[in-house]
Image (cartoon, rainbow, N blue to C red; front, top):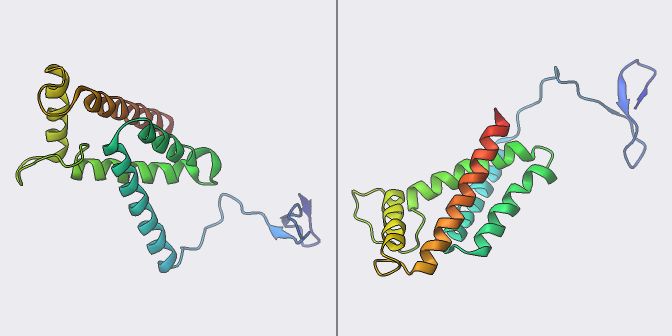
Length: 158
């Protein structure tokens, strides 16, 4: 950092050696253009839909998908906020569509409650009722991992 002749702090560490003013926390940011916000919303919805589908598949790939999404916190400038928005959309997607793929639900029932009931019945019946035991355990582990990630993010957010 250096002071320019106009006594405004500037960042001279960029690649081209150009002086750029450093933003202060008190500076107001300009709102993003509507097309940029629309693209961001679409990307978050698509990504959360894909994550929801991956979680419904269960298994190691769903663990990796959740961990890769959580890595946004470390690699992006606004990673923590971005992951919070994405996690919120993923949880909403799971609430709306349940956690089990192709689960039979009536129009009045809640897909998430129905999914939980199917997994619980499969585990209690040792895989003889509903899902196989292996599928139920995959679902259980994935949801437990997602719950742990959610609790950790909420705890760090205050």
